[in-house]
Image 1 (tube, helix red, strand yellow):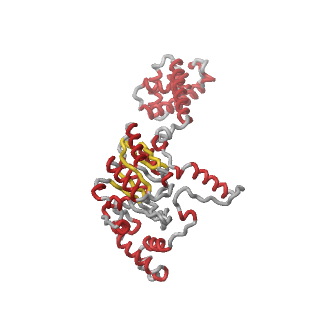
Image 2 (tube, rainbow, N blue to C red):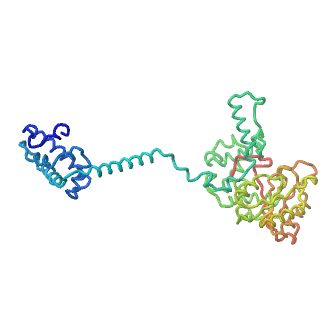
Image 3 (cartoon, rainbow, N blue to C red):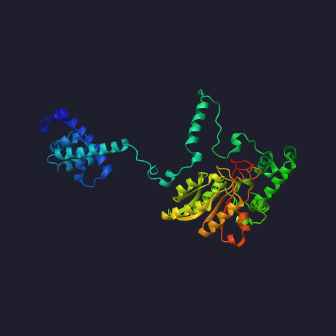
Length: 436
């Protein structure tokens, strides 16, 4: 229409072209008006005409006179509903004396800009994660745990090379970065595995199965039956008391009583997921501010320095005396406390590792007495790491617990605050991977 009729006066068109125009305009205007009704419900004739002008370049170029001529064409008019749309559009278009092309261009430009912004929003790089190296705990980033550090990472890389068939002057890696006996060839003790298997199995498949006496020795079945009774119907798959199953704690209490010659209540014992978990729990309870300090032996097992970094506390290291078989001296303990206080820190606890890790020394009773007196005087919680107490092989060395020494010191140690740690994953059992 625009190409053929734009330059010719509408009243000079022949009837055939008038008829074509009428039919074409009826269809076009009805479609445009239907779109207007669907989106704006024809809130006003003026709004309809504006939408028509913006939505169809053909309708925008049709003169008011052509609209009137189309309404008077000789061909039959559309159905009443379409006639209403045509008439409504014609009336609305009657108010358009000229089209504001600058306004149309402005709106088109605004639409292009909006489209460009939407496209940019889709293609722009993703936002950084809310949890990243800058927003995460900076104390955790600063934490170092040498047992899981660079040496282990390099060893794992070399092991991957071996698996890939790379030519190296050796055929295997032996991991000796921590106490993990079964990883370096120690076989598990049969009795413990038999009891564990019978405890994990439901009674009808284990201790009560008719074939059980043919598969397991009688002592393993007897011990597993006792443990089933302690655990109750839930077995090994159920939650337990916060401190651990009472029957198991009683077994531990009996062990400590036999070791020290002094009784202990199972209510004073906590069973944890390894000694490391217990150490973490206690340090979390002891440390309340970044100004707190904990005395730690140097050298030491790195869980202490790592946890202190994570908790934000100050590590007050005291040097062991290598010339005296890595002994602890009261002078070095006092120096560590004084240095910490000079920095504005408040010493809260003192760690000893007996037998030593990594130094291997076994403290004499006199050394433990000195440490206990020091902790009482300075009001420090004594944390006695004694997980290697079963690993004493020198003929002239004998382990004695800090608890036994403190009890036998009597009134002198009555105000001592002591927490000691032991672990079934060390010593002769060696089940490091079985916990809880």
